[in-house]
Length: 501
Image (cartoon, rainbow, N blue to C red; front, side, top):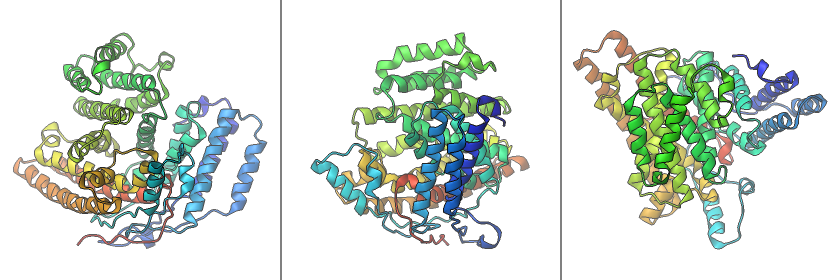
């Protein structure tokens, strides 16, 4: 993919690539070959810290590029800031996996939020400082795609292209600190460079959409706008399909969205019928918000090469999960409190994990018919995987979210409902995770048996193996990414996860 024509300044693109490379040198460097341990052991890891002269030369080079405008400069600055933050974290020492060490949530991370001096805020800060990520073990081997660094360079250029003019340097930095490329590379270790680039971009889009849905990031009007535009893009794939329209109407009947019901659907249908959003003329789509425009770019890439059956499956899952993210944002805006059961149910959708599972067929060029995909054991595997990935995120993101006042987290809800400390709640989540890993393994065996009974073809059995591996990879990738992401502002300690026997 070549974005060079999208920038007036060749100097900017060059500097962005350099900044990306600099950023990567201070991130976790996953080693392969000799340090890749054998069965029942996780991937070994090492840290390569780039020496300061490169940072110095990078800053000098930025200062010498006179053609960079303010927006370009902010993009580079945010990359450099992210690099410095990662460098600082890595100097504390890195752990490949987790053994229940204190996260030492640092007050420097709180500085980005509006700090009050009331007792509640002080208590949240103290609780975050005292929080210890619980011990948990997972049975899945972690492998990293060898193309991850090269694909990430291309994905970050895509990210800057779509969002540099609309995001603050701080927001841009927060997304960079997620380490989406490691999450993607470990989730799809066999993907080609071009398809891995797509996955990284899609993950960047997801985290950006999720962040921009927060009340402190976007107004309600902006949130409704990019939701309408994104839903219209999805439905434009099948403008005559009644199912997608009925599903959207059902989602709009939720009391959190009911006030937008009629106007929302009318605007979506108007964009679908009057302004086809999938036509190639880019000038017709300049009115789209950055969230919707970037989503359209990714959406067209996927559906243009896949079957109608897969496209409709992808459309239904993405439509449901993107709207669930809107409803979660409404919960935050109106202080809606979840029960544990309602949170788990809604998190399965708002986390968009099944969207990534469905994407497997596009990423690895395989095919599975709906008769198998929507079978009971396959859906059980998807559900268990979604829960596991979301809960891993919860145990690592909890201190950051607690200080920010974001209470949609399983650790928080268990602590509140059971009247226990957050560390005790985290231990409960850890046990739930262990049970969920076993459920994934059982569902995988059940799925294989189901396919044999129903006389699945050889190619379908191969696809099933890919799906099972993919789900397992999501868990190990989530642990790798979230446990080492500077986004969650913790001091890293060296530790190990012992795989289940």
